[in-house]
Amino acid sequence: MAGKEDLKLLGLLVSPFVVRVRMALGMKGVSYEYVEEDLFSKSELLLASNPVHKKVPVLIHNGKPVCESLVIVQYVDELFAGPSILPTDPYERATARFWAAFVDDKLVPAWIGILKAKTEDERAEKATETLAAIGQVEAALAELSDGKAFFGGDSIGYLDVVLGSCLFWFEALRRMHGVGIIDSGRTPLLGAWAERFGESVEAKGVVPGADEAVQYAHKLAAAAVTAAAK
Image 1 (cartoon, rainbow, N blue to C red):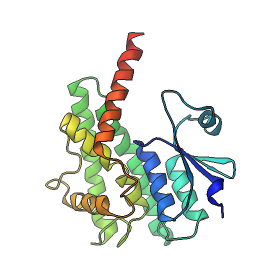
Image 2: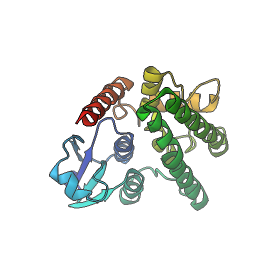
Image 3: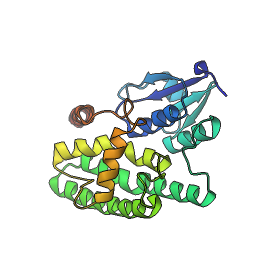
Image 4: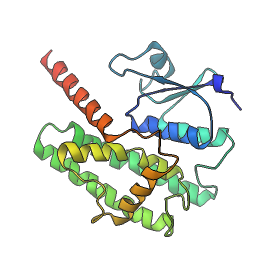
């Protein structure tokens, strides 16, 4: 097992993908060096560590980089002692991986589409996609939780980490564009789950506030305007 000097995480405060990894490391009680990246001026270390995607997060373990948030979380879970993040039962583990992939393949592109939309019609289309996807996640929570507090049962697990890392951006989108992705009326189970997640030890101190997401969204918009003017 690595000591604290052997682990370095390249990240971005407002990246939900980085939040996942930080939560996983925290759940395992692992010490690591955190390096905040400027994605408008990427470091040589980031470019060398993730030459394929040139994105965060990157976990550097004993000088070897591990990339992509879902891969890193599973790597951390397998490498370090402590509470299991993924389910131990093979079928439950496969199901959690399926829904995590659904979140990243369907839900994440849809809500990011709301953020990047150039017209109100485009934003409305992406909002519809997002709400359809979150409706399916609501049904998954009903099935997987078996009436317990989290996707992982009585405690936060893999799928909770994957979806919960997006919640502060959901609130930012509500403030900026009036889109309520998780709504207690439409998705009551997720509404209650989100409150529990936000109050959890695992989330506190790791998940940023919506204000920080809003500020970063404005920074992204300003950079897009500047790039378009060139």
